[in-house]
Amino acid sequence: MPTGLSLHIGLNQVDPDRYGGWDGRLVACENDARDMARLAGAAGFEPTTLFTADGTVARVTAALRDAAGTLESGDILLFTYSGHGGQVPNTVGTDDEPDRLDETLVLYDREFLDDELYREFGRFARGVRILAFLDSCHSGTAIELPEQSGQTARLMPVYKQDEIYQRDKEFYQELQRDLAAHKSRERSADALLISGCQDNQLSSDGDVNGKFTGTLLEVWRDGAFRGDYRRFHRDIVRRMPSFQSPNFYVTGQPGEEFLAQRPFTV
View 1 (tube, one colour):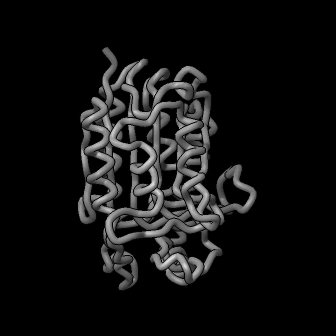
View 2 (view 1 turned 90 degrees about the vertical axis):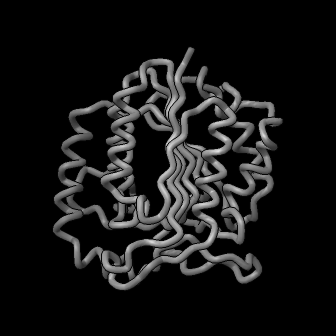
View 3 (view 1 turned 135 degrees about the horizontal axis):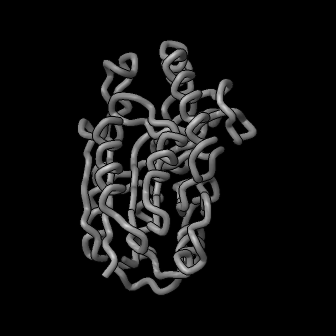
């Protein structure tokens, strides 16, 4: 019988002492993590949650490494994140992104680079199914959501991204060099990501759930959904506003058998 472990991170704010006085206050991210953990538990996963001040780089990394030490081929990891997203320049590593920017999860104590997440995913045994849902902004150039949305964007302000990057530039450049060296030595992670928006878009916060997570839960219908991951993604997209289009993205070779499964199958 396969094992399913899940990690759910929801940050309603960040540490202002680490972000130059900015606390990044949001409303619905802890609710998103709580609701995704409830979904996961009902589907047969063993969920772990990290809320706001517990959503540090050290704790997120430790939880992922604990899971990597437990799961074997045929098992599954579900990773969900709800919070701010950002970007930092990458001018020192062998980054394959044409805009030379690393997308980030804005964790409580610092930004967590996308390549850091992929590095942690790469620690899992081959054959472990890795499924990630990210409800955050991944745009360093967009400035705000259309006025009719009535929602706050889960975007770390561009001026604050620039300020923090200039302050911590040497740290991020050294980290990017290390990550580039790691990528040249290790295999890529086999993972499926369904994100809250495209790289050049913003994700909306909400009163109860983020727009993406709330729509995902609506499509899932407490487990009544029938279909595979691609249909799940398409049905979510159909219910989303035009300015926020969730992405379907795979890294490595997660396998057609996995992609053809009903979502959240352990």
